[in-house]
Image 1: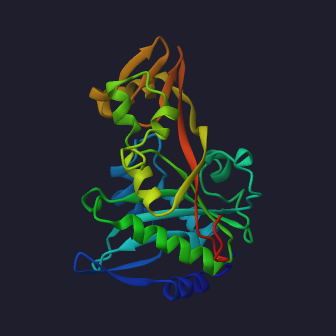
Image 2: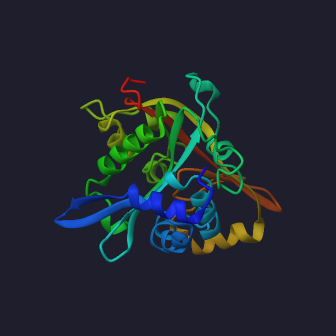
Length: 280
């Protein structure tokens, strides 16, 4: 891990990439801890439910723990249009032994207790694209950047804990929908029905296994839970059992008399190119 701030700044400059997107110059580079507030306001707030957002403090700490792995795409005006948080860890080739998202990132999700500087795997743990830039082909740019970064770092595996982006909406029409059946469902062209999994598959991602409890938000007071129901997309909330709620997100809420817990499943996947040039 780089120790001095001036070294981090130099690393940021050396690792920046200028690319053309929709006729405009954009820059891909690690974000600095002091830029975490911008990442939070521009990307976390519009993309995540309030109980899942990484705070500015968490984002800043990630940039201190693993500065090369906290990347953002910037406009010439200095606004972030996408961000990516990477983790570095060891993978022994057995998908069953992969940690959950929470285990790998820690609580709070800074990675500081789990970061392995010479780990053989780079994990894509959080990808955010500003809503007005979604659907503009940034997925390939992001994945190519991760592959290049893994080569620079000498990591063998490029992996990710991926969140099927449309399952929340899908489960609105079928509240008892099976997450596994949804993840396994394909279009006639044999690509996943889910738009995010489909974009990843087009870029070489192979699914490894479902992580049934990837992200867990425990011990939320019943008052805070009720506040979420009143203020965050209230039309999406559906009670599907006495203590079980869907909320339009990928996960479900388990509500008791005094507290509630949010549980979300993800999909572990691996991209077919590692830094050693071999397929994974």
